[in-house]
Each structure stands twice: as structure tokens, then as C-alpha cells.
Amino acid sequence: MHATRSDESRRTLTDDRTRFEVMLFPGVPRIVSAARNVLSDLLGDDHPSLADAKICQSELITNALRYSNSGNDGGQVRVEIEYDKAHTTVRVVDDGGSGTFPCLTEDAGESGRGLAIVEALAETWGVRQIGAKTAVWFTI
Ligand SMILES: Nc1ncnc2c1ncn2[C@@H]1O[C@H](COP(=O)(O)OP(=O)(O)OP(=O)(O)O)[C@@H](O)[C@H]1O
Ligand SMILES: [Mg+2]
Image (cartoon, rainbow, N blue to C red; front, side, top):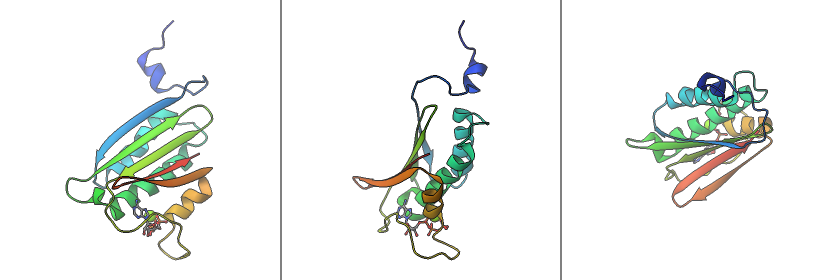
């Protein structure tokens, strides 16, 4: 018997398939919560890594909007999610052009926490330049 559409959206990830999702968002603040909702829909509300994955994804999208041309008029943010029953990888690709590079800061004050949170929660994370664009990713 085939799964119905509603079964599909509430699927718990028990099989061995790897799934992919790619989204291209306009560079506006409310995509942070929109992308969180997508993650819930993909992983399922009771996925053990969902809460941490949402936090990390939100930090990366917030950085993309703040530090790259993605946050400027006409800017975009691409979010790629690859997931299977064991791991979830989220990659946030921004429009670059800021002159700064994503890195952990020593500053433990009011700012400089985002990537430290990703470092603490994710299994691994990294940065890749793709031409002028910057991709920051994590696996959890
Ligand atoms: N996508 C990005 N493009 C360019 N630079 C970035 C990007 N993401 C982060 N950075 C740089 O890395 C630094 C550290 O980022 P992090 O998210 O840890 O701290 P923050 O954004 O400064 O503060 P917080 O996240 O606590 O509000 C930033 O200050 C910025 O200079
Ligand atoms: Mg930040």
C-alpha cells in the first residue's frame, strides 16, 4: 500500500533513504522562522535533533542576512538540507561580499555567540567559498 501524502509529511525517518531539500529565500528576516518550520516538516516534530538543528540553522541564516549581500535589496539565501535517519546536514549559502569570514570569535560577550553555539551543538561544521558566495554548513 502506498503512503498517503499526510503519512509522507509526518514520516519518521526509519528507512535508509537520504533525502534532500533546497530552498531559495529572499533575504528578509522572517525567513529564519520559515526555514525553522520547513525543518520541522522534514524531520518530524519528535526528531531528537530537531531543536538543536533549528537553533544552528537560525544562527547561520541570521549571519547570512547580517554579514553578506543576502541581507541587501534583492539578496537571497539558499538553504540546502540533506538528511537521513542518522544525520542532518544544513548548508546556508549567502551572497558574500561582506569582507568578513565566518569564524569563532574569542569574545564571550553579548555577540560572537552564534558560531560558538553551532560548534557546541553540531557534530561538525565548516565554511566553503563558492566563487563570491559563502556556504556555512553543519552536520548534526
Ligand atoms: N555568513 C557570513 N559571512 C561573513 N562573515 C560571517 C558570516 N557569518 C559569520 N561571520 C563572521 O563571523 C563572526 C562570528 O559570527 P557569530 O555568529 O559567531 O557571532 P556574531 O554574529 O558576531 O554574534 P551573535 O551570533 O552572537 O549575534 C561574525 O562577527 C562575522 O564577522
Ligand atoms: Mg551570529
